[in-house]
View 1: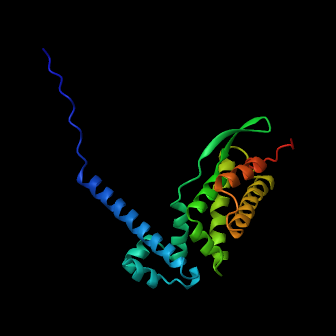
View 2: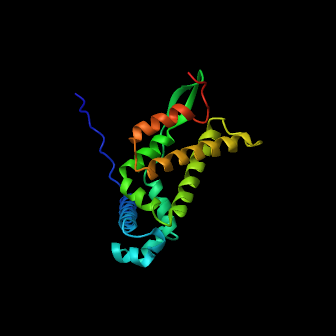
View 3: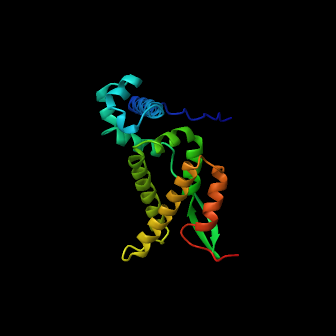
Length: 206
């Protein structure tokens, strides 16, 4: 009678374990710095927050900060990245199946979760800095999505106009929502925006 011998699971090697520990330390450091920046941003204008103040607030060494970020604006961009990437979904647009980037849901829902912080940023003199980084991130996300799905035309204006029209409409709607103290839920804002824009295509009126 043959005895079945189960395979012995491979143990992680020392380099693998060291790499995982390094990744965890990196993640914890980034989260600590982001949390510190957000707490300070609730108290003062972003431009008035110095790197040294952030380091004193978090206990992170200066060399460690600069190992992760070029400056505090680089840290600000990392805050957007920490939200994760927008999902995609299939939907019917003017009778055609399209893969839509759910960037509106991504933006409205993340903002609703961090409403106090967003309000603080956009009631401060530094709002132009924050908005410029957000706009740049949205342009990159939407442009890459359009290219991937054959919507963007590199040889003409139509692709870039479509990207900037979509992002401009999203930011304009989003700013109105933020500056009017969130009069509707994120889900309702997403539904209203998507029903009109539908990934850059204006549907015929009912």
